[in-house]
Amino acid sequence: MYGYVRPVKGEMKISEFERFRGVYCGLCHELSRRYGPLSRFLVNYDFTFLAMLLAGPDDTKTCPRRCAAHPIKATDCLMACASLETAADMTVILGWWKMADGAQDGHGPRAAGYKAACRALKGACDKAAARQPAFAAAVEENLRGLRKLESEHCPNLDQAADRFASILRSIGAGERTPERQRITGELLYHLGRIIYILDAVDDLAEDMRTGDYNPLRYRFALAEGRLTPEQERELRTGLQLSHNAISGAYALMESNPYAGILTNIIYLGLPAATQAVFAGTWNAGAKLKRERSSL
Amino acid sequence: MNDPYSVLGVSPSASDDEVKKAYRDLARKYHPDNYHDNPLADLASEKMKEINEAYDAITKSREQGGGGSSYGYGGGAYQSQSAGQRQYTGANAQYVRIRNLINANDLAQAEAMLNAIPDHNAEWFYLMGSVCWRRGWMDQAGQYFRTAATMEPGNVEYRNAVQYMNQGGQAYRPAAGMDMMGGDAACNMCQNLICADCCCEMCGGNLIPCIGCR
Image 1: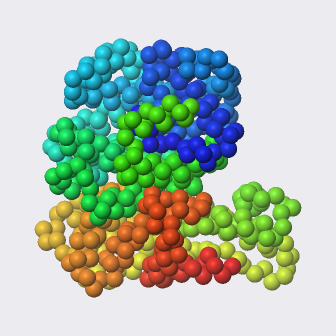
Image 2: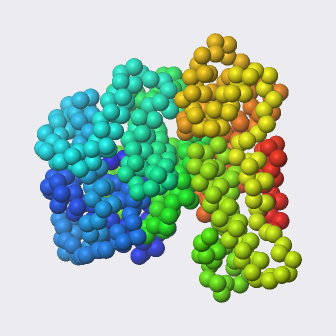
């Protein structure tokens, strides 16, 4: 979806990388199994992270599988389990709504593509929403709220980020104990903030060109698509504070079978993505290339 | 109570040094300074208590009547001071009530009371910043804190809040440099520690001896 939530591959053990790929491929297979082959295009790193974060101690069984992307050598894919199923449902719901958003305010052939994809996946989205009614309601309500803030040219960065972050926080409500609900909710809220703000930084120049809403434009009253070093520092401080909150929540989580990978993503992956976004090297071309080469 | 060895994640055959190291690593992780005005502070402090008790139990059982010297991070005394229960001497009774609401995490009520106050002095901006901070609205929090500090430059509380934010707060990391601030932040580790120590001392704690002198 956004792709900022990913590990730094060079710092992973090979066994960790294989397990990470197993969850990613497992999510892709699970999407296809539950929602048809077209839904596979919605597979992404952010929800791969979610599948690992929500994993219980037994959510680790794998089996070798082939697919169009790996036709010769089978990948050891994570088999269907509660966390993977939840992640697949949510991938479809949020993916569909993001595309609906794109169809509504996109331009030209891109919007037409989103429109067609939305139509094709409407059944899948309804099915997923019936399985995750609370999440679907949170997505709809908060994206509607975000749309309203966008139309008002909201200058309050936190308020806009809060809408997206609240979607992720709602996932915590599905956890087993009140304690875990708080911890997971807090972690995901701040992860949502970071994703939203990084996306705003990443898209700033493009949004200034097309005139689309970007919270930073109004937050800093920008005339052109560039931040001053002082504004950049302010944003990065805010991101650091959200990262601290993630750290604090993560430390309180119970032991997780993917702890090594999650630690890599939180402490190396997120800072690396932040660095790349602010350096301006996280553009669409690089994004695509990274995706092709990483798996 | 759980088995103290499993709380610290070491085997009963671990050496004293291994136990001590495991304890220190965990204490660094759950240290109250990492949960400054954090909505999960209560859970971290429970965890800290559990670790302190486990470490105490192990050292006591190993010394077997050797005086029962108490290690640990000073337990309750230190934590309660860092948990934001500071003494306020604000002249305005309404602000004292708002501070209590913020400490009790009743942010909606605190915000409603703040919004009902027509005159916005430095303390109003500071408290508005505190509400935002607790809510995770870091960008707004920074703006309010800075306004408060500009309106009343001599106020130590407001200045500390700005300074704490500017240095990116404080959090546990598995190793140095694993943060969002980019290049130079890693080099500021020591500086951060010293700043954090000053902050701590402001509220009665003392971070450096806390980590360094065991």
